[in-house]
Length: 202
Image: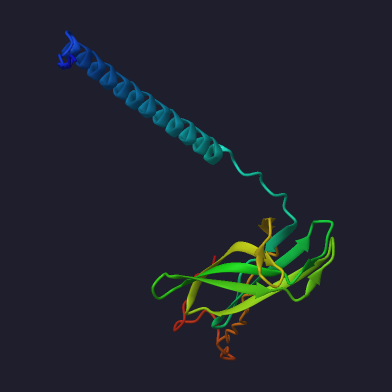
């Protein structure tokens, strides 16, 4: 009986180092290509997002048509008080409820601004109807009042409006004073032309 013995020898095939080098270079190339593609896609996405945002910001908001006109009267001075007022007219086709005028008041002392909501005398304005507003201020405390807004409803929502000049300030009346000049009393029986009172006779 003959025993056969097979010896297996692991011999490194020729050219295995070259194959590994080629595989490594290929993997590196694929990685670089993926990275470049990812960077390109990310940059393009950022550009598209930026252009879309810019277009949205550049697009102006549609202006709302005014629904009322505010006529601002000239301020009246009454002693130590200043009266600011005017008229609001509903120019829309719908009723306006709880209308108030927003004023920006400037203090004399430090120049700070103070906002004030002044309600109209009429609680609701029908289409074409007018309502007045009036505010009494101390002249020594406030230097100016400026119209900045119009509000409606219980939540004081802003309302689109236009403004214009209202009633002019009435001219100031100057009290005339009558001055009486008393003539000197004439001395009776005295000649106008005398040695003591000579006068030239033409």
